[in-house]
Image (cartoon, rainbow, N blue to C red):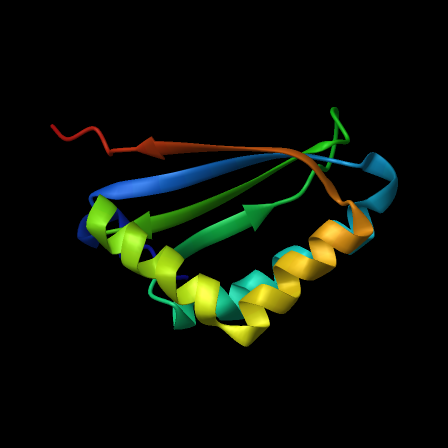
Length: 110
């Protein structure tokens, strides 16, 4: 288990997804694809999290970055990566994601 992100990354991008609850399996396929793409594009992937108990239409992802500039460089790579483009296209075609919110967080230090 890799926990080094806690110490190397100064910000975390938290993505909250509202997904179609009848398309959870397709969203999980979408998320699995990012497990490979995100690290290759410069993000420190903390994880994707699927609904398990309770609310069945909310999923989360968390990705660490050294700075907001690092996040912007990562986003530029995603916009030009064929696998990334294909995954975005898959999600749009299948209408998996009803709403997506991004929040940038910083770790509380003692």
